[in-house]
Length: 191
Image (cartoon, rainbow, N blue to C red; front, side, top):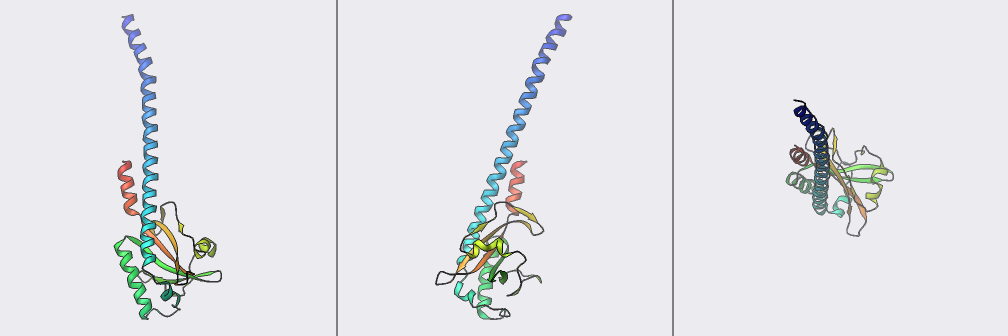
């Protein structure tokens, strides 16, 4: 009887640490895999956001946009730009799409594709500071490197400069890409 107890005790002494070690290794591998999936999916969402923002910028005529002034919402030029941007917004899963222009250090909305009562009219002040978009008005793209889960849903924001025919930056396109599908795929793969 003593022999059986010893073998069971020795077996348990070996199996318990080995089992614990295997469980910890599996948990570690699971966490690494989850993090890798998360980073890959976010990167994929960022690339999608950049592509759709580029498509939207190509649809905007910088010379026409430069001519817009507050109160011009009923003009043919405004409506033409608005229609093109709304087509891109609906086709490419964009939550919010709008143009911005500046007057010194103040930023204002240009064309906003929002169909609700919250649509910004030309000349309405933009809620963020000039410093945030200074590089975009200097000709550089700004791409948010994470999925923002604020009150606007899961979005990835991209700001791209809009040039006129002389190559001058006349406005910035704001594209808030709807990343809900990316988050859903990420959650599915994580499970």
